[in-house]
Amino acid sequence: MDDKLLNEMSKLIFPDLNDSDTIESLEEMFPPRNLPEGAKVTRMAPSPTGSMHLGNLYSALADERIAHTSKDGIFFLRIEDTDEKRKVPGAVEKIIKYLNGFGLFFDEGATADGDLGNYGPYRQRMRAKFYHIVARKLLLDGRAYPCFCTEEQLEEAHKAQESAKDNFGYYGKYAVHRNMPSEEAIEKIKNGEKFVLRFRSLGNPVKKIPFKDSIKGNLELPENDQDFILLKSDGIPTYHLAHIVDDHFMRTTDVVRGEEWLSTLPWHLELWNACGFKRPRYSHTSQVLKFDEQIGTKRKMSKRKDPECTLEFYYTAGYPRSSVIEYLMTLLNSNYEQWRSANQNADYREFPFSSSKMSASGALFDIAKLNDISKDVISRMSADEVYLSVSEWAKEYNPEFYSLISRDPEYSKSIFSIGRGGKKPRKDFACWSEVPAFISYFFDETFSVDSNEFPANISVSDRKAILSDYAKIYKTEQDNNSWFETVKIISEKYGFTSDMKSYKANPDAFKGSVADVSTVLRVAVTGRQNSPDLFAICNLLGEEKVKARITAQS
Ligand code: GLU
Image (cartoon, rainbow, N blue to C red; front, side, top):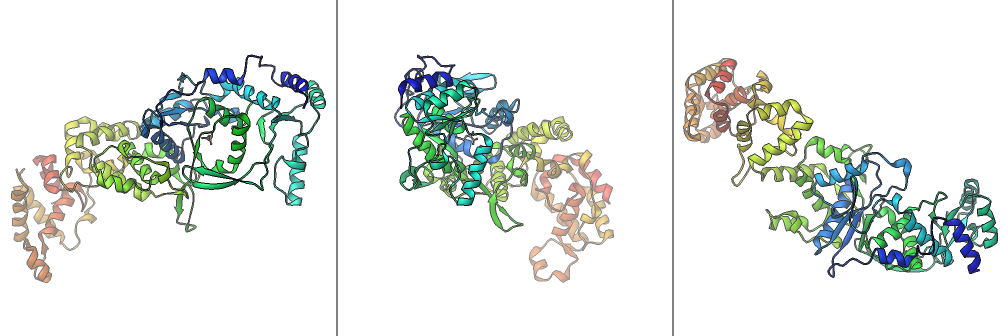
């Protein structure tokens, strides 16, 4: 190829560059990071579309853990905003806010109003020159060329490939502008014809490249033969070129990205080599799947079908961030649960995260499992912590409930201390939005009794008599035993035995047992048959309120 002509062409294609814009200048501007051996540099590279879903959090957590499990590792944020149409204002703030909300913090990268770090800019739109520098080098090396094919021509080629049962794309005999003489290309550019810049592949897909993915393990990939696009006609890079340029000059050591990129990985491998850059390690994460009851198989989670796919869902429902993270950790690393049972109180960050322990075939999301984990997480919180988190959630998502619980914080904290602590703490709720219904009877405004809740085996007259007797003698007791003695006395009086052994041996000999009487009292005081410890509830409500509630039902 004629160097002079290539030079001329490069000047026409890259009028924004001058002679000092070289790869070497970029290497100098963005030198290898001065980090200890083994430090990992990972990035999250979202498009600023404003929609954040569970899959994003799942891979961000993997990125963050891989970086921060290594000493002095770096986790940074790069905004892939090359597609102007998909850009949504405020998206960057949202991405940062959501991840911070889940306890994930970037060390470097795009911030709401600028950049933090020495390897930026961290928004692709602001990096045009860097892409052009690398693209120009490829052009001058004979590894890129302008292609003037129109949409229609490409469509025709596509049809021809379809009927010939050939692979799709721009390669081999279909790469019609690959060998266009430079003079002709220069002429066309001068005439203002639209073109894209394509990569000139030298690969042969019959040949296989051994490749080790940190998650998928050892793979065999066909060599690439596609002359894929590097720069679009407006000079904006495709993902492929931007990926190599950014991850090289931002000195990423580990590219963690969705497995949908595996199919174009051979393109990237060839491009790394053509640029002469040392490539990073790759970890291709599998998709988050869900078992679909209706079709009876696993499928990809979908924003349209699964409300739990969006991160908004976890905020609205009020899942503690630690529960979601805890659950995602179990999905991310197969040995996490085992570690957790041996280290019950440890922070999840102490877990030795490893990409090799990530599922190669797909992580199955199961909300029931998340709920179990969350109940566990909440059961280990202190009453104060629960109060604070519920308040924070309610303030935003349930203001009415917020005004109830914030009226007397000490009272609310006492509600949350019932059944907390001890060896077997209660596991009542999985998320904060379940709390209002659960504790409604602690507030007169939300307390009500449906008489159908009273046990059916107790006659209305017995029930009323029990309640009216109890209202007369009820007083706040210091301990559970003396309280229960009173309940027993009333039970015996109406033929409900307090001797559970005899009752079990011969239930027909009695009207019922003390358990039935307790249920009557429980329904009168709480409106429901199941509740935490009734003695504790009564003490907290206070004598006056308990008496009033019982009298109202007698
Ligand atoms: N912007 C790309 C995406 O959202 C980034 C993929 C990557 O991490 O390299 O899919």
